[in-house]
Image 1: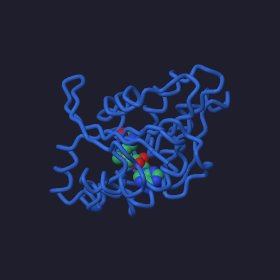
Image 2: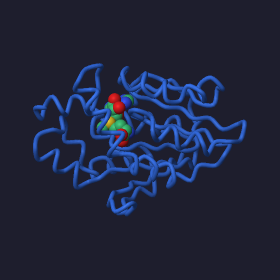
Image 3: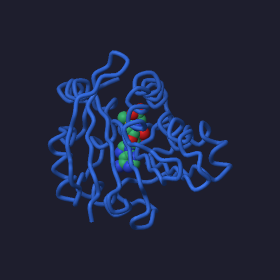
Length: 210
Ligand SMILES: C[S@@+](CC[C@H](N)C(=O)[O-])C[C@H]1O[C@@H](n2cnc3c(N)ncnc32)[C@H](O)[C@@H]1O
């Protein structure tokens, strides 16, 4: 796939051979990132949890298992109809029970009330948001005071893809994303290296103080 086409499919997979290929890639390559984002978020059984840009839904699947209190809710948003449908199929049992709700929408316009979410996680997603400040402000709006957010990425892979002109925007640099978080009212914003299953990845933490 050409770099520009690959970048478009990574950021907004469509019902096409390209979309199918990137979806296979997410499942094979990003499971560790998704599972660690869920683990590091510190989900409690009765929490309301949001994942942005869930892709095929592996992170949603592992978060749903932790929300065993009847009050526990999991919300997934992705602006790709193809990914929304894939995750709908994977999570159908939890959706039918009312524990999981999926929305096909943009992070910049979440159909959620103010101060309603306890934990947020996302993997490999912010680099595709056209306006980081809008996305982070919207997340801040829906998070409860003191709510916690975890972002996971493999910086080495992302910077390699950027050097090959795959990344459509310059937003992939963690410093740019962390500055947007601070400007939107997040505090304790920091990045750490982590290792799991022989993979090195980065985690960005942020707390929504109000
Ligand atoms: C590179 S994929 C990562 C998927 C999954 N999180 C993973 O790590 O395998 C990026 C995902 O974020 C979604 N996405 C990108 N920009 C978005 C936005 N502005 N609002 C909602 N979803 C977005 C894409 O549709 C895609 O499913």
